[in-house]
Amino acid sequence: MAGSIWIASALGLLGGVALAYAVAKPGVPRMIAGAKDGLLLARLALAGTLIALLPALFLSLVAGATLGGAWGRQIFAPYGLAASGAPIGLALGIALVFAGVVLSGTAAGILLGKTVLHYRR
Image (cartoon, rainbow, N blue to C red; front, side):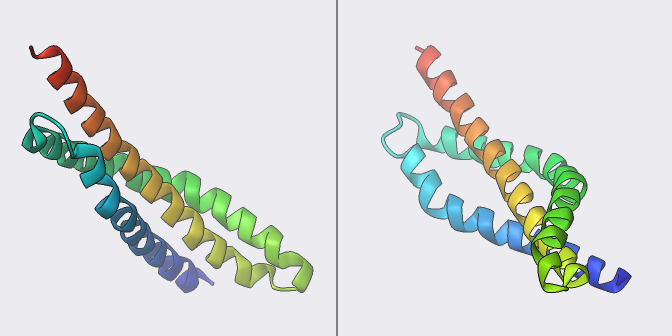
């Protein structure tokens, strides 16, 4: 069981990175488009993403794993698969929380850039 938890955690982190990339790839250029200084916004978006990586790791492993594992256990318990549901929920919880925190950091960087551009005049 312990091995499956490590595998689920690793897959959750990889899934979170993939989910964040899949959402940010079409979304960030749309947010940056039409700005006076798109390079500044892109740099601040990258900075926000990099700053959010460590909190995303901690929050996903603590909150996402706890809530996801409990959720997976409850969902699969009526089918007699509670032990199998925990790693699945664990991976999903980690992926969703990691992607959410990283994307929040990206959005915060873009918002900071737009604020700086607005008041820089």
